[in-house]
Length: 382
Image (tube, rainbow, N blue to C red; front, side, top):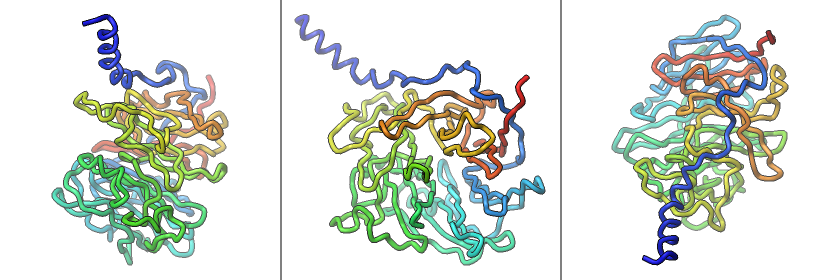
């Protein structure tokens, strides 16, 4: 083999491995930017998934097995499971996911929630709405169903967020074994969809007049989106999604855009196989930030509270594999973000959701069979 041929062979061999190089991350032993204390405010939860505060100060907590509870900070109590939740398919990653009150909750007492329905052989992400009256759900009915049904028990998505116009954003996974479908507009797998609160389709959705496309689709080319926030200050929709082995992403979501999976990725398959030789292609969006190795992001808040001024405007991203929370500074003007510090790693727990409370505290849900709701507040400096 000539010297030039050997050089070409070496470059072709090493290029995929470069995808495994970690992105810039803060030192794990660096002190936190501000001192804080963590207290357990509720426990006895089984794989809690989503936390949402209601206007009265109470909070809804979903548990993956299909339970919904109310936590009262005033009474320091956790309710029994709320009755009226539809039948949930709970196996593997499937279960009850995001929960969100109506923007008009004070008048309509309506909540929205996402869950897996069906069975291992035929299942899908479903979104329903119901009225919450006297700690029970009434008038529950389905407003969206992912199409088509799929086999398996992985990658459902399941986060919800409101846009200022009152439309509802729903994130979906690509079902793990169906990754190629994320590049096809003919189905909902691997997409983010936008619907009205009654399940109808907004007339200005980007693909509503695209022949053969599912009209609910807002963006596509996603793997498994489990973090979602709307930033009203910057009029921006921001999501994060799981990569495979590496390549977790934070993305600025814009209508009609293609986010690349699996045609482009910064990760490789769990077996070590190359999913795609490309991490950039024309017409496909680049992430604001990617994590390689993977942190397995899940849950996210944009901190706008008053208790931690140093965290103002930062994303706080929960990590399952990383067993911590990553604080990320956004630079939307330059389409980038920077992971500036790792928080709460001393817990050693999988963090499923991160929420800013109405009191300015940060609330965490830990993902295990003995899950907890944790409250983070400032600690006076020693």
